[in-house]
Length: 272
Image 1 (cartoon, rainbow, N blue to C red):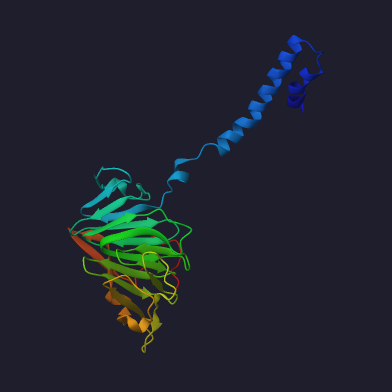
Image 2 (cartoon, rainbow, N blue to C red):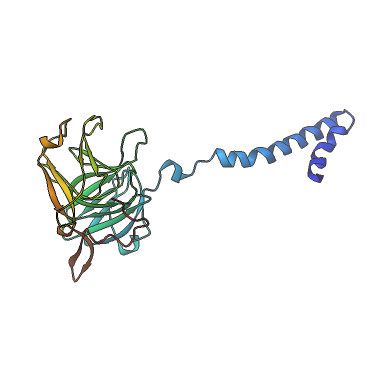
């Protein structure tokens, strides 16, 4: 109440040159006090809003190069980057021989890059059917996606793997893309690069004769089309225990776990 009285008191003075000046000064001061916080709140966009942090480096071994977005710089990762270096859209990661890389993408899960693998992180497009977070250029990427129906996707040179909540593996070489679903009832939707197939192939897991969970695998040598599942050469006997991902190194050799052992950094349970 006292502050309001202080700023409005000059309005009661008699009209004159000095009185008008006092009124103008008081009004301007009041406007500054009101507008300054609003300008700070709405007018200043933080760098994280312009370039959102996608994730963080969780572990690596061997030779891994980090290419920051929009830069010709190439950095060899150091131990100090673990749990400290954030990852942004258009960052590039190149994993060398006898090396591996583990990243956590916030709200989506854990991703492991095997030797001789290159990825380019992406800025997800919320207007597309599936939001692409990474392009796998070459090599093998092991994925543990946390959220069911997250619309998370990874793009390869031939297809978009739209994940509906699953653990899976992608492998790319010069001739083909291999998509291996290890465990998920809702599965992986295999879309073309434009994401406009009305009848896409969907890989799903199922329960085998002995009660074990069996996944599916498809190898693509060209972009997928609107075909039935029968038109693809789909394997349906994929066992998680037969597939491994790198998680560490000892005495210069990589250590692997089967897909039945999920990463310890997960924040949610993986749903089938």
